[in-house]
Image (tube, rainbow, N blue to C red; front, side, top):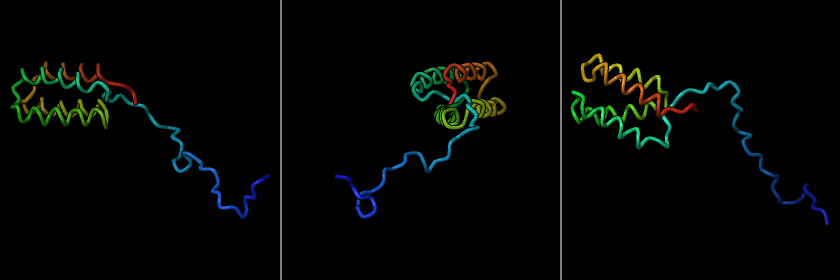
Amino acid sequence: MSINTKNSTRKPPRKFNSSRPAKKDSKRQPMLSTSRIGPFKYDVKAILDKSAMEPSTASSFLATLIAKASRNSIKEAKIFAKEFVGEGNLSEEEYAKLSRLLDRYSKYR
């Protein structure tokens, strides 16, 4: 017995991913690996505890640094951290340590 598709109430098969155009020229960039955020926080907190930054500023700095590194790119997170060096909250040595940590916990996405 065959099914008459013209008069039946059966829906045609669904086409997956047809509403989204294919990404052909997307450039991959280093971002913070989301599976390693916990160890990253631990290492950054160790650096920030020794810095001259106030604890309330340090917590908001850490949250913003993680957000920029995981959503935008490692490059933007480094630029954000460099602004705090100019203000005197971070030393060049602490910035270098943060920069190495960002590179170590990054992943191309």
